[in-house]
Image (cartoon, rainbow, N blue to C red; front, side, top):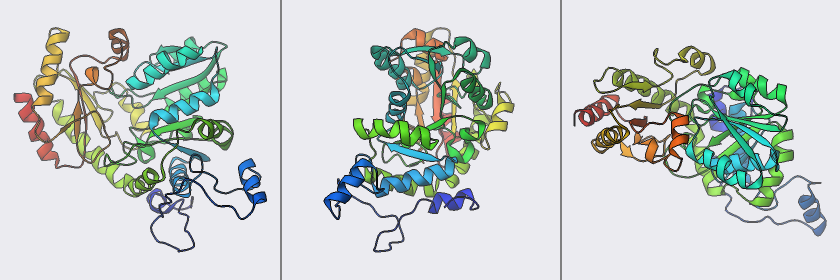
Amino acid sequence: MSEPFDFDTRAVRAGTERSAFNEHSEALFLTSSFVFGSAAQAAARFSGAEPGYVYSRFSNPTVSMFERRLASLEGAEDCLATSSGMAALMATCLAVLKAGDHVICAANVFGATVQLFSTVLARFGVEVTYVRATDPAAWREAATPRTRLLFCETPSNPLMEIVDLAAFAKIGREIGAVTVVDNCFCTPVAQRPLEFGVDAVMHSATKYLDGQGRVVGGAVLGSKALIRDQVLPVLRTTGPSMSAFNAWVLLKGLETLSVRMRAQSASAQQLAEWVEQQPGVARVHFPGLKSHPQAELAARQQSLPGAVLAFDVGGASPEEQRARAWRLIDGVRIMSITANLGDTRTTITHPATTTHGRLSPEARERAGVTEGLVRIAVGLESIADLKADLAGALSR
C-alpha cells in the first residue's frame, strides 16, 4: 500500500501480509527458520534465485511488514530493520566504508555515534572529521578525495540544531559521498529527508516509532541499490537483526505515530515557550521558538518542531552549572529521570553526564554540551501538570 493513500492510512495498513489464517492484526512469526518444499527450493531460496523466507536473522514475515510500512512512510524504495539504531548506523558504515576511507560527521551528534566513528571504526583505518553541521561550507571544506560518507542528525541531540538537507545532499553528490541522516527526532511524520535528495535515512526505532519505551530497534532506508545490494549482505553476515517480537511491537507503534507526534510536538511548543520566560534559564533550544537561530529553516524542512527541547540553567563555573542542573532534575516529580526519549512519558536528563558522558571534555565542548544543559522529551501528560512540575523544580 502506497500512494494515493494518505500517511495516516499507510501508518495503519501498509506492508501487511496475511497468513493462510487471514488474520486481521499482523501475525507474530516466532520462528528461527522456514521449511522448504524440496531440496531444490531450499537451494533456490538460499541463493536468492527464488524469493521467500529462509532464516530469521535476515528474513522474517513480521520484520518484513515493519520494513515495508516504514519505507512507505519515509517514501523510500527499501528498508532494513536492525536490532538498534546504532546497529543500523554500524551496518551502513560497514556497507559503504573500507580502511583508508574518510567520514565527515556533524559535531553535535549523539555520544554513541562519536564513539563509533572515533573509537571503533578508527581501529579499522577509517578517519573522521567533525564539522559545524549548520555551516554548509564546513562540510565542503572538510572533504578529501577519500571522503565516502557524510552523517548528521537534524534536529541534533541535544541542542536542536538544524542541518540544511538540500545543501547537505548536494555536497554529498558533488564529492561522491553517501549522505546519511538520522531522522529519529522528527520521524517521517514531521520530516522526510529523502525528499531533499539525501541517500539514506536511519532511525532508532526505540524512540518515537515504538513510542512507549517497550523495545529496542533500528532501521535504515534508501534506494534498493544501497539497502538491498550493499547493506543487506552486511546484515545477513554479521547478524544485527531485529527480532520478530520487536518488529510486531513497532508495527503497533507506527499505527499511532502521527497522533502521538502531533500531540507531543504541540505540548513541547507550549512548554518551550513557557520555559523561555522563566528566571534562571539562560537559553532554550527548540526549533519552534522564534529565538531559535534556524527557525525559518526548520519551518521549511519540518511540518512539526518535534517534541524535544533543551535549556541551559547557567552558572559561573562548570561545577556550579552541573550542580544547578542536577538540583533541577532531582526536583521533578512527574518527569522520569532517564536518557531515553520518544516515550508517552516525559523524560528529563543531563546530557553531559549521560548521553554524552563518555565523550572527552573537548568533544563535549565541540558539540556545545555544557554542564548546565538539561534535555526534556515531552510526552503525553497534561501540559499544565508538566509546567507545574518544572516550576516546582526550578523554584527548588
